[in-house]
Image 1: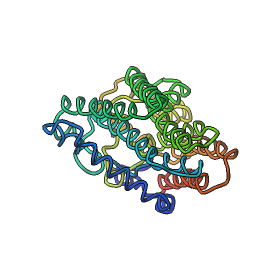
Image 2: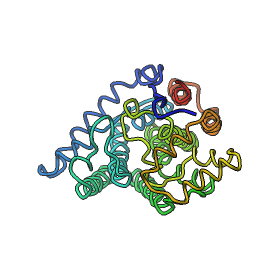
Image 3: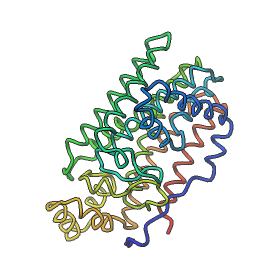
Length: 336
């Protein structure tokens, strides 16, 4: 078993830069446009919006828009705005998640909630959602706005369903995975689909996005148990502290001996947030990590399989390389 002093350090995949390099000008345009979005808000609240936008991470969803567009063969200004819209929705969900999870850190700095309180954070997240839909409505076709609105509703529904079962550690794995697809994978799928569609491409990248997004959230759930806060750049252990049943806990209950299972259930029966670190230490075993890895690998293979019917070009190669990146991050959870 890993002790608290032996928590795994998550590392950035070595080939991440190689995936991003062909579309760096596009990603730079997205970042510039996001900064310009601050001017769309009342000057008295722009500091809150700017702070939230500064939490942008690896630009994974804009990258998916770009790669989807490259599968179609070309990128244009519509792709930039689509990526901005999806990133606004994503950042809004992060602001709200930090309130729900009472998280103090994100990207190695205090969360918006930790700095300005929950009321400001919730309303700032609402403003980001509204701005995303406003930009989506500016497309000449209503299809983009419909797709963004539907995906946003799905994401929020998934978060609500997960919140409703807080403290229910006996949730079925199928229900858990369904919620992951809703609250995380849906935006991955939206990014891929809009990238392909706005480039005039044929086919559908929805299954790729859902599989990659589910694998990514499973990895994030594993990071919450097996990772280290300095490396992850955010508060860890919040899932357990807030009573969320995630993959490591489910697998630990499934594979534990009768005595160990009773010990875990006894801890859960008298659940209190302050027991989160104790439970986290109980889950951080090699067997649990291996079982988690097997589950994630299944979705990674599903993402690879969804690419087979696409034209063999740089866009498809980039999407395949993203799967490899996430696979390498899972490898990092097994490092000492």
